[in-house]
Amino acid sequence: MQSQDSGSATSEPEPTFVRVTATPAPIDTPTPAAIPTVPSVSTAEQLADPVFPDWLDPELTDVQPSDEKIIQGWTDFLSDTVITNQLFGNSQEHFCADGTHFSRAWPSLELVESPEDWSVTLHPGLSSSDWGTVQIQSIPISRIGGKLWGGQQEHEIRRSLKCLELAATSGP
Image (cartoon, rainbow, N blue to C red):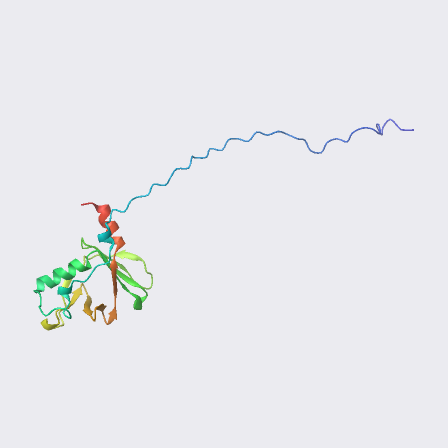
């Protein structure tokens, strides 16, 4: 016999979990948009690496240009270029056509703008017969054996994208 306190043997256990229907809140997701690409404002000619003029190379010509033409020729050749010296931790010198000079030197390799504009001068320590060597600010540079040298190390000269970007953002 069952006591009244124990309840019925057929009673259901009380549910432990309750099922609740939830409606997810809408998530505001922006519609994907195509990222606009900015076409390069630099021409293929501007992006091409500079070509050293034969008339400025004393190994290729017997005619010595005037000092002014030598300076102008080197200035035109070096405008919007970057000179890299692998022997000194890939140090770089950027020479922009507007005279701006950026330098990336070891150990930080941070690209910083020089307080002085760059310019080409004749190398003061050489005779006029060695007219193929000029100086960029305080960096002597010359062309020997078809290669560019500065401070007894060969240098690589390429087009400076930094200078081209600077020229594009500053306008005409």
